[in-house]
Image (cartoon, rainbow, N blue to C red; front, side):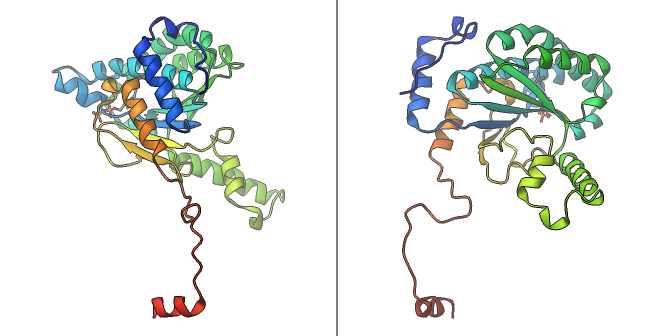
Amino acid sequence: MKNLEPLTLTNIDQTEEDKALQEKVISAGSIPNHIAIIMDGNGRWAEDKGNIRLFGHKAGVESVRDVTESCAQLGVKHLTLYAFSTENWNRPSAEINGLMKLLVNSLQNEAERLHKNNIKLVSIGQIDRLPDTCQSKLQEVIDLTKDNDRLELCLALSYSGRWDIIEAVKKVSKEVQNGNISPEDIDDELISAHLSTADIPDPDLIIRTSGEYRISNFLLWQLAYSELYITHTFWPDFRRDELYEAIFSYQKRDRRYGKVKNGYTKRLSQAVINKIIS
Ligand code: FPP
């Protein structure tokens, strides 16, 4: 069994029961290398409690911390969180302002903890659309944590999958125009290398909270073969125990990538094939 590497700060809060649960998760099967999460349901969580939506976003930060730290403890290497989509710019300005302030405060409050836990922060999306205070705080934490290598936490901010693909197509087109490549050179690998996630492997597991069955313009290209886990839990209530459930579910999946089940060797003669399809 893989040893659980202790975390400097988070272990202070980690119960014996949680340690035992993590050991169970680790010994039950492979741990996804990359987990991506659509954190949904903050607004409904707050409204159900008679509060305004911003309370839900604030409570959601606790889930971000808990899930990030438990991913680091389990040995997940990449965690990508859909924190603000391109479409979220269409929300009321008070909610957008609140979310941006919350992002700055959270980055400020969590920076040292992320760093001490050897977590590297990166971001994808149209970062230049964020308010200056957000951009500079984000860059500060990215710089602070750039040499960390336990877990890479990627915040998708002002991000959309279609934007990502459009940007990649523009870059590839320019290379064709400049004569560096020919259209025949364009393949899966080349497109992947021009996406904002070029340095990040595709997600193995995508989790969506709040019971919606859609991808909402998240990592459209990158999710091609990711395993989906959908839960009705709203994001502020999604904590490590449910992350473990998602991983247990992932461990039971048979990832075939369009091929047949491993070990399936039955051969069919042309005559049998003709008989079946006629
Ligand atoms: C979706 O819930 C959530 C968001 C648009 C924002 C997510 C932000 C956080 C969890 C807090 C800040 C994040 C970081 C990384 C510090 P929703 O508002 O769409 O909820 P609803 O579907 O119930 O309306």
